[in-house]
Length: 587
Image (cartoon, rainbow, N blue to C red):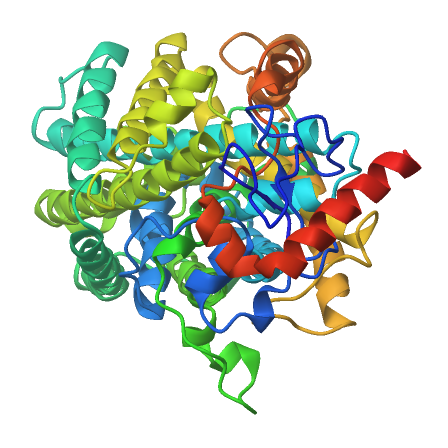
């Protein structure tokens, strides 16, 4: 077990002074704190042998502080809610259609397959480390001992920022949908950065208040969000083709839907521009699925049913099921929705993309359904976006809280403040997450290019974070991986993980490419993701080397001495200490 003790000394029949022990895994905050290895004295975690998730959490070194209120369906709801198909498609409709209808349809389908491989790889990691800190905890366990603190801190920091960027992009998309409704009735209404940020800030504060409520209330909100998203999706599926037909507007044929290639507002070659845009709508929409990982300490699992295939036993690993099922559902439903939109959008891609409305999807609705239906659907989409933002901020606060618990938030005092739990709710972490999202949102004052970078940062940052533990698992730590309740076997597991790494590498590159080049590349068409994406990771590493190394020493256990002895037994503690001493002598 790789976790840390929160006591000032470890008591046994004979007191041992370990303040100067050279810990092979980590040295803790105060001089007598240390990392626990495992009840067998090795460096492996055997979560799958635990009788329940609370014991598994304790084997990782963490005390159960949050209430387990989320069933497997509600864990699905967390991910599905954050993805929010119709609002997300609306927010990415410029990227979806600016390189042609085929980009929207085939790009979505291909992107969904790539995303599913990432989801499977991440689900296995989450099952092996059933804690909110699973991503950077896995990184810490699988990294070379000399660099594990630095690498895991950079991963945790980047993941936290990317989740906050997801909150930003979802909430700013909600603000855009609200303003689109206003513009339908007041065409002369001017949307400024100041107005957008003011509405954005109000929405962030609103969802933060609801996110601070009890776990049982938030679990019900996830159900409401799932139902709302499905309702809006079905409404558009039915109403858009029906109104297009009743208004005697011709549908686009299959050739247009699946083969049309264009380029709008760019000087890139058509084929390259198609590649730049094709995957981004799916990748952004079907994103932040690591939310289920960060909510694991609030899930309600049960033991595996013998003989039942792992994919058909959702209650045994609610987070893993939530990730895979939500990606699959959004992949299929989103592809069908793209086909419907392309069929009903009219013959001119340019008219749709260069619309005066804040989002091109508004133009499609106006073309086929008229003002009243468009306002009704856009209003429902804005409501769905608000629920999306609440779900995303909820999971972000859990990652923020996990980092604070492990002293990963800048300054010791800051970590201790944000790690505090009130009535089984990390309210301080919710405040911290909302504040970070408000600060990142200031980027929208830099213009459309900076606002677009927020969207790309949510993709780039997330992939830069989760690609690290997956690569380590396939390479340096390939013999150290101990599966949890969700595992696809010795062949499929590494094969799918390798595909995930390849797809993430490609997408990290793609989301950093600007929409134009040469003479057309200016401050408005520049893609600042290439700066702020790796930039945040670089800032994290510099901050760790210069300051945070004093406090962040890897996963920090919050178990008491008594809880530790009860969990591990005297023999286990002897094995741990002897293991540390042996490592120190060897090195």
